[in-house]
Length: 311
Length: 222
Image 1 (tube, rainbow over the protein chains, first blue to last red):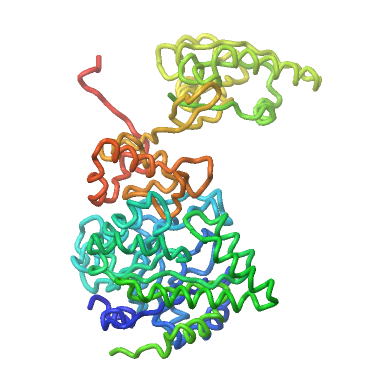
Image 2 (tube, rainbow over the protein chains, first blue to last red):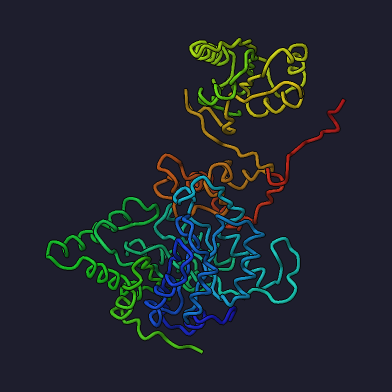
């Protein structure tokens, strides 16, 4: 056990794990975090706290993680390479560990071109693979990136990474995950799964490399909230693969005068049930950003409740 | 070559406010090749400025010259007798030329007429694109000769990010994903194993981040 986090314990116990996601507010209101956290409490094993996702200035992931912990939930603190160099990252991670954070998701980060400060410097001193390696070395070898000894208490994180089975070149995707695992990733959360066929093929490639036995793979899911959102994800989000059937299902619900949101939840539950059956999938990561209230319903209908209590 | 682009006329006009006599100085090097700051461009810019100032009732005298290069002492020295005759030297070289003029002529204001864009190639008539970031520690032996520092929007060294789709970078459908190109090229060369090893964190001290760079070759010094 590297960190003793709840997420690490649940995954290690072999139970199907569930993580949620919470986007901090674009202001200094702690209540926003608390309100969202209450929806997720009891439905997930840990909650990802994004680090200025899509490069938009938000409350910091570390500060938001503290507020989440005050609400009795466990954070998966996200850290990107976009806004900090190796000095700032290591410093922040010492602080995050001292504040009680035990799970860390290491990301390169969305390019700032998409955000609200497109004229900023993109730091990218290192990439996500190198970030994983640096934090693993801080934890296991007690050394800073420069090679200097880390004297005293080391940061003890359960290390996570992201993987996108739907990006190109497809043949390199499993290999890239393997690199992240060698670098230090112990769990992986994938890009949103809508294209089951492609996800299944990627998992086969992952199993062929034996990577599913070296890390816990959690499939990313989200309920499409509207036909517009599904179309936007299909056409405007690079690296996202939304098959026409998903949009057709939502349209069908609308035509039948049914609740489209309800159908979105059904789609999400169906995907969870299908990925559960794939060998090597250890859990799901439910990213209902700005629709956190849907998570309890999804978790309940997908048979993911109650969440285990592991000591 | 170093690729540059002329600044918008209004920006240049703004810099020259109140000046009566200037030297517009072209460069016969890279910026001549990329049609931004050579002899022809000096002539065109001088005409535009004269017409603009005449229209405004404040004529300006322009002297036009183009040196073989503005990045060499021997060519810049040729201006020593006349540099003091101008209100300013408007350099149409890249930023290197502007700097070197300023270094050599402390009493004459030196102004840039170009934005220095990047080190790149001329893909076709009228199209230039970046190829090298001058990081000072070349990695091209590991990436099939294609540079992830200059050509990947996130300077990734361990393969494509999750935003690579259909050969394009997530920042724009007009930008190629260099990691897709690297993958395809190494596959064609039967060298895909090069992508398996983790590329360690890069030493950026040889890049701009280590302060201004300088090379001294004792074997060549006179």
